Image (cartoon, rainbow, N blue to C red; front, side, top):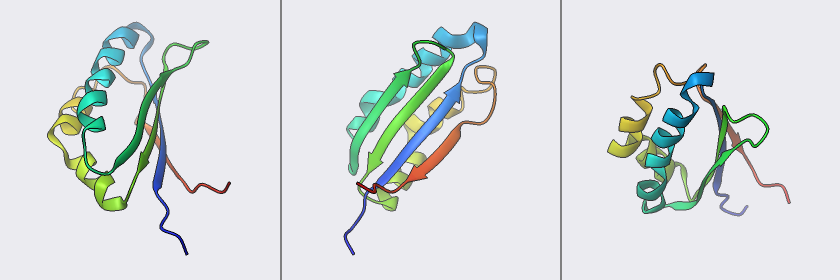
Length: 99
């Protein structure tokens, strides 16, 4: 069996009056995360039709690399700012590449 990478899609919904504030907070994650060992892809998308809808597309080399990211100071600092900005806990989904 081949060594599969970890692929994650994270949906985060902003409160309607907090879209720009949440966007600024989420953007704080991009550069430090892209510098981490084990990150292959780390992209942030915003839905054109529903601007409150943000999605991260992530790919990691291993569970260890992902766990290091989740424990990192920059990740912890950003998630601490979510209260009052988002409608619910982020929807995190893990995937395997099939084709």
